[in-house]
Amino acid sequence: METDKEQTNITSNAVKTPWLQTYIECGIKPHLDFSELTMSGEFEQTAKKYPEYIAYEFMGKKTNYKVAFEAVIRCAKALKTLGIKENDKVTVCMPNCPQAVTMFYAINMIGAIGNMIHPLSSVNEIKFYLNDSKSVAAITLDQFYPKFAQIKSEVGLKNLIITSIKDALSPVKAIGYALTLGRKDPKVTADGYVVMWKSFLKAGDNYTGDYVANRSCHAPAVTLYSGGTTGTTKGILLSNYNFNSLGSQLEEACHGFEPGSSMLAVMPMFHGFGLGVSIHTMLIKGSKCILVPRFTPKTYADLIIKCKPNYIAGVPSLYEALIRNDYLKDADLSCLKGIFSGGDSLSIELKKKFDAFLASHNCSVRVREGYGTTECVTASCLTPYNKEKEGSIGVPLPDMYYKIVKPGTEEELPYGQEGEICLAGPTVMMEYVNQPEETANTLKKHEDGMTWVHTGDLGSMDEEGFIYFKQRIKRMIITNGYNVYPSQLENIIDAHEKVQMSCVIGVKDPVKIQKVKAFVMLKPGIEPSEEVKKELLDYCRTSIARYAMPYDIEFRAELPKTLVGKVAYRVLEEEEMAKDKN
Image (tube, rainbow, N blue to C red; front, side):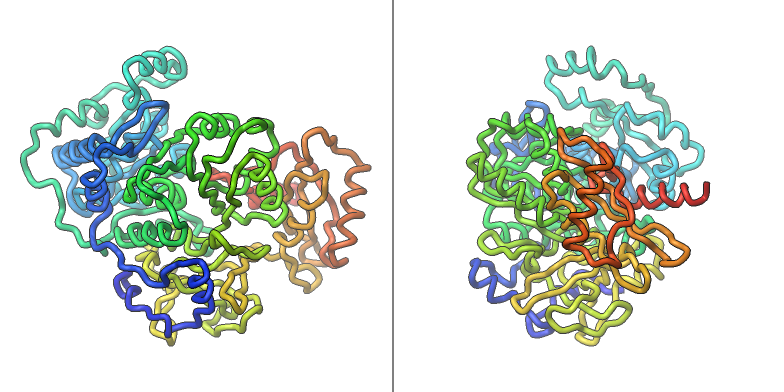
């Protein structure tokens, strides 16, 4: 198996690098020196350099770097007291809150591996994650305890650490929380299995042994879960080096993240985008994370107005929701220095709409779209701050390499030709946990001597090195022998003045194999009707080839979303399949 260390030997002569001229124009260094420390080691360096700077803010409570890192040390000692050893797996099933950040770095400090999962996962999903990772301990909020209680006898956990939102609040706010939202939280009693957060920390205060592991930066550190390149759930094993390299790449490519700047951290910690960009990169650069445990478009807008963050990062549906509602109607957004979109495809029309929205609210920057996969932590490609091309996801981050190959092969294709996107560089994952065959199918060593991630995504590259994402190869619709790309149709439909957002899927057909169906969410004030449907279909005929035309448009008040806010096209596909069975 290739290691991320071997990826550092890549030279610009190994593959075509047409984006180097763009680096020169944008003042981006093509090659960087990456940290040899662990993630907690990087956090410690930052805490020593900026002890009085604010590391994170949570529901109004601010914590500086000195206090934040002291909390990590205390938690690391408590983990050792609990018997957690180097390379043990500890599951973190938490929203974005101080305890989650503290636990994440404490796990890293003692050389254990953090297994990051979504707290809104189903009981069966949690059981899978715990068993697949062989976790010996876990931490979750009291409100999610019943899920763990149901599967206690079916998993190998030795200890379950329970905390509460009120544990991270000031005394006054903690009382207020307990009397309001906290009234719904289940009562949890400590026993030989359950350990309450405050008791857990207190037990470690008398620990006198070693608690900082002598850990290589190339050692495994984190498992994140993803559908991977084949659509099935996989644990993606990532190293300290992967995350630290990402932080350096983003700092260089973004021209920012200055010490003292702030990021509204709404993307969850179980996701590479949230953990890698909004949390870890910020905390090793001396910036502030404004931790958001749960959000709605209204609360998100309120936080932008109240906290005036310098950076925001989110999925396209988040930005769509902000412009669909009036929550930011009179807001001054001049505080924003960087707005990043990732996790899903940002349509050309939505980008135009949001850029116009930003300009009308005193914001001097535009949305910068990126692209990445959890197999490379998160973003590996980003639109430069001073150069963009319509429909492009930007150019590779420093020391990242892209090539477009003929699907199912390693044959590189010419500029402008569509094929499978392949990635190489210092953020490439170590492996899929417990799945050597899937790892071998995704990580492939090419003739150039480099190990490439075969993403399963369709795209192309132009002669200046700008990358154009089409969609998942498996999402391509084949109708009557023609290839139809849903994302292209969605761009066309979204451009209609009455459309807020759309999703296109393939539906089984006995003659055509698949036929095209569109789901449309109309703008506020526009009522669904046969007249509107006819208008949209007539409009589509002017821009969509006959073979790719939707046979039907179904109106929806909302489109289904995944746990990270992507449009869940698979849900719509499953609904259509269920109709066929009935």
